[in-house]
Image (cartoon, one colour):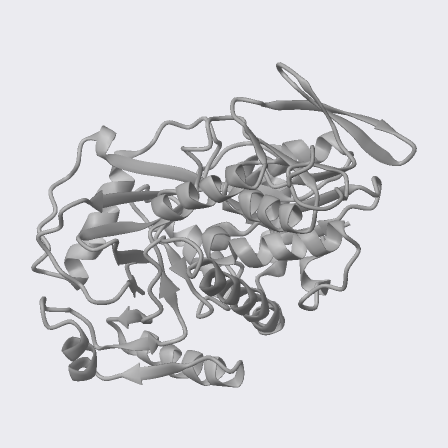
Length: 425
């Protein structure tokens, strides 16, 4: 029998999760499993967040954070090229300047070194949970690996070091020659010197994942409330007691802020400052692709991602455009993406799509490329889970599990020090 909380047994209390992307839904999943009565609020209709249009990677291989020494120098070079893979829209914005200064300060070799283990730990935890989920519902999950294809000698050299580091972290990775790489993709010619074959990686179809997860949540009694934009919190005695939206109010024993690129503003409602900026990404999906690939691929110099998914589909994604969430989409970003694909896969002739055929979404970029996960200092019943940059889908279930552990006061599955929410003070 289900009680009023929607789960068998006694309820742990009322948890309000703000945000209906993969991080919010994963948090709701694990909170529900541990007996909480869960309501998820989404400012939209749960169908247009960043969890839908991404490359679908579940990628322990991504243990190098966004904040690296090279990206700052490269970003300055690309600043005036709106087709470039990494573009910061120049504007006078206090939050952007604060984030940018912290990002540059974080982009050190030492930070890259220190970030590898926590990023690997959370990725492997998440992958383990995905493999459990895949036994429960279908989201076209395939654990077959990913190719990191490079075209230049400096990147071949960098690939050697990356493989060595992957081995240190216990990840299955192999450096492939051109012939070894091409043999894995006999259907099409590849322009590249070689690739890293990350056998540790998997991929899935995001649309199936999100809808399957929502179905699971509804069946377990989780309330999914669309079009509920949070405007303020009611607080008393060191806790947030109610979440107020434009059209309603929700009593809460615990609150989870998992609002992606809008988390800086929502955390501010709880008197908490987190440096975070939206990084817009774009994708294009061929629903019945005339081209065939066996493996997902990262095009290193093109900073683009390609994923064969759900049988006959191929998705092309990429670019990181640090801009405001109300800036109209730029079609030259898609042109730059398709040009990169053509340089690596010369047989792929993909015409420029119309604007209605592209997807774009905002990834929440922390100031050091590491997610913010855990309790805040001011209110003892508020947990933040955001700042995953391009790894939101990959780290979703692992983050949800860690959120549940934080809410329930349980020991964390991994060392949480790197993810502290208020690490920037």
